[in-house]
Amino acid sequence: MIPKIAVPRGTSDILPDAIPLWEGMESQARKILKSYGYREIRTPIYEETALFKRSLGQTSDIVNKQLLELATSKQEGYALRPEGTASVVRSYLENSFDKKDPLSKFFYIGPMFRGERPQKGRLRQFHQIGVEAIGPNSASPYLDAEVIALAMHLLKDLGVKNSKLKINSLGSKESKEKASIELRERLRAHKKDLCKDCQDRFERNIFRVLDCKNESCRRIVASIIKHLPLSDGPSRLHFESVQRLLNDLGIEYEIAPYLVRGLDYYSYTVFEITAEGLGSQDAIGAGGRYADLVEDLGGNPKANIAGIGFALGIERILLATGQIQDTPTAIDAYMVVMESDSDYQREAFKIVDRLRKAHLNVDMTYTGDRSVKSQFSRANKLNARFTLILGEEEFKNRCIAVKDMTNRTQENVKMENVLEYLKKKGVG
Image 1 (cartoon, rainbow, N blue to C red):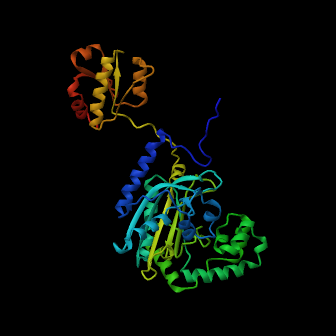
Image 2: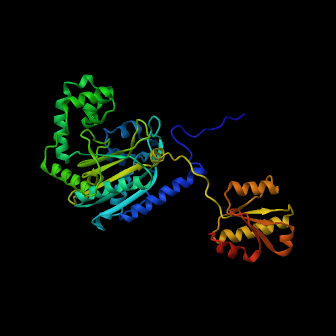
Image 3: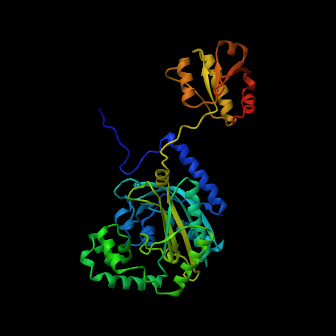
């Protein structure tokens, strides 16, 4: 026997019974996102590898450990997108949005890919709902507060309860550089006691030591660092303004002094949202501001273009809400053919086609067990609102017996009037 091929490790099929949940979530998300003025953008699922290495940073875990690169015979390499921000910024510049609008507000919904060890809430192919607000002179604390409020609004409306918001500020590029020097000096004497990953991070990206999950590293960090040593006044003032605006909106938050996020492009405001029911991987969404990313990807350095965004994990939302699958969406009608004569089948097929062209959701049996019992069983399984029955008497009289599956009443309707009848019953 030929062995079966299983779904790749770290991925999963989204089966038909689960699709209504996904469609409902995406529809609700689009409605909310548009109410905030965000427009949908769809970028390729793979990009030039250089895009991610330049934007995410050579020192990030995503680039060093998780980037899924594609085999290619050409010199330039490609990689599956591990996150959405870099692709959106690339498209923003390539399509000259910086010359069209002082502030461009995008949202995206789609799959991302990371080559990491699969576990609960962490897959190699996963799906995100994300936003990016980008524009010249857009470094306003009001925009930070709007983006955070939007993330919390989405999660609440999608059914996530007891979510917690953590915020921090990484300061400006200059402030981060000064802070990195100070952090390295404070931690130098403890370097040998850090985990292997953090010893490597000590040289490559000292900020990543702050959010290490290793208990030993966390104790060391907590013993010598109370908060990020932001050295410039504008960073502090910006962060204080964001806090006031969140207070004005009634959004509860916790200042997390070790929250740095794993991507090199963040500066100023960063945030993370956690939820119950996700195990150790309890982050359901995260984001932050980036002041230099556009320039790093080829934007005009004099244009002062900045942005802020977030991404929410769809699979993690489903875990947090306890939703795994839904019942199949009910169909409008199911055609039952009482006789095996091919003329009956052809007539029924034409009626079904006419109803489908009127945008009704209708199905019938073509092959296999076509007994009347099995056809009614199939109608029930598909949650058909009506059953359309074509038998010998109906065929002679050019009518269809229409059975309401809710109250079990039945009426004979002329074939040419079936569509009008169903419409009057509220179908379609």
